[in-house]
Length: 469
Image: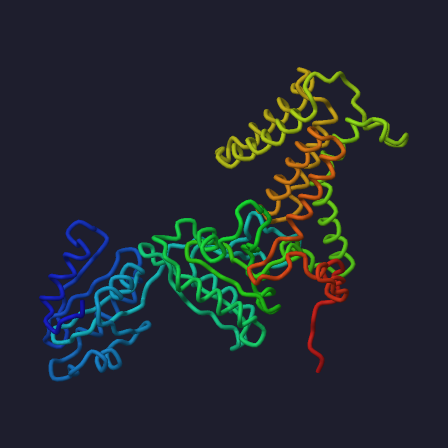
């Protein structure tokens, strides 16, 4: 509905539409501006009270003979603070109001004057728990979109950095910021992403970026390897933008979605670049080696125990030293699920109880579980290494993808012995090789297709790029 020049008609319609009498946080004030009656709508808790007070004080000094004939002239002359807009219909106005923008109606004007003096509840930009670094910046993204874009702008002071705002969700109208460098981005991919977001037909992005990711890239669900890199670090997002990637920020989410991302992009961490090249290279190669070990250690050990004739003399110590009461495959699978159970319990445990309960869980699952005969010492040792190794890289999605592949290899090895081990390993490798990024490119580029110079950059951390004068 388009607004009427009659203020009473607008108030009657909006009171019914917004259910003002029931919604206590939808506030309206009838005021007088230049001898005319006016109505100001705002959401309690979303408005800077000091700014709104100054605006209202400025309105009170306007004389009737100074009132302009139209809303456009009024907004230019008498609204001294905030971003100003003019709206003609109720749909746009209600979305703006529920986003925190104050809306002003003046009798005789057929437009709504929007005054953006909003503020959102926000926590401090402290270092994220998961993406910690040994050296470097200690700030992190928060749930407020404007804070996150400011953290990126602070690092890239270039007019070519473009941040476009879009919305998705018929009920949530969630703000989505698409960040890119004009001269470096893949324009074809950028157009594809924007087109997919515009065509979204969803009620709400309930789970923020995960909901958006599943909507814009409905990939095959049975391949668990992540198609996006998520980071809560603004320095990582800024570095990705300078490399030509696209960064998507979603309101109410404290992480950035970086695309396109290959498996090498997901494995990279900020610590690789906060240390000298030789140290960064060591950290990167260590992380890659540990990730491969976390995938292959327990299946390989299970295979060797099932075929003791394959164990060389120098590895004889890996054989079981205690009687086997429960088949190894069941021990390994039980521990795989038990570790996830402990992780979920740790997340939901109050902070004051985390340490004592962790100690109790460690004793029960460690010493007593072995003494009771449920688990062998060697099984506990290798699963402990795998559990710790999963935390060597920051991506939860990649960690769980490796876990699923490891379980598949374990089951196939237990069922079909050597051929099962080969089949499971081949399945894991093919899941990576035949995966594709959102841009449709190889998931393991520059390994396939092979590009030596780029491959060297992925494995060896060279000097940081600089500009020659």
